[in-house]
Picture 1 (cartoon, rainbow, N blue to C red):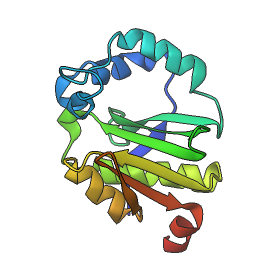
Picture 2 (cartoon, rainbow, N blue to C red):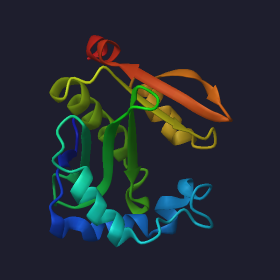
Picture 3 (cartoon, helix red, strand yellow):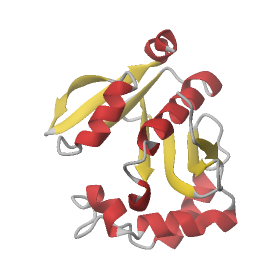
Picture 4 (cartoon, rainbow, N blue to C red):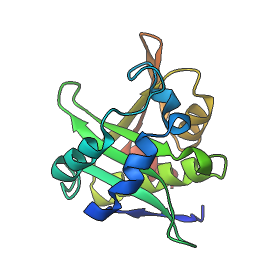
Amino acid sequence: MTSDLQLYIPRPEDGWFYVKMMSDPATMAYNAPWFPPDGCIPDPESGWRKLLETWIGRGSERFYAFLRRKSDGAFVGDVNDHYNPERDRWDMGIVIFAPERGKGYGRQGLSLLLEHAFRVDGIPRLHNDFEPTRKAAYRIHRAAGFRETGIVDGIIQLEITREEYLGST
């Protein structure tokens, strides 16, 4: 698949985009059960500073990048992965800024994250989970090769191993 996007490691001055996304109710609506009423992250400026300190530049321990459109350099979302020692797995996330949804960026961003995680960082597997109502997220994960490993407390669990991914590309 040809991608209109690229991974972009944000610099401190790029934090405006993170703050904009985390403050946007349409983008963060999926997050409302954890951050009522609209899912927006409280104090996103502080969240950005913490992200800079603990995520960016951490190699394979933690990975965070913006998704940047190649044609004009605009940021359209973000991706991340990190090791979760409590569950002995690598968790991941992807967020597409609401005005940029419906353009195929979720699929492209997930593909870029998988490439980086498995080919660059060499991690063994990636896990993501979300509510069954997030049908678009489910579809793009399944299309990328994720398999359903179960449902825990009503939350769908999905996973893909390095071998599964590399064997399909």
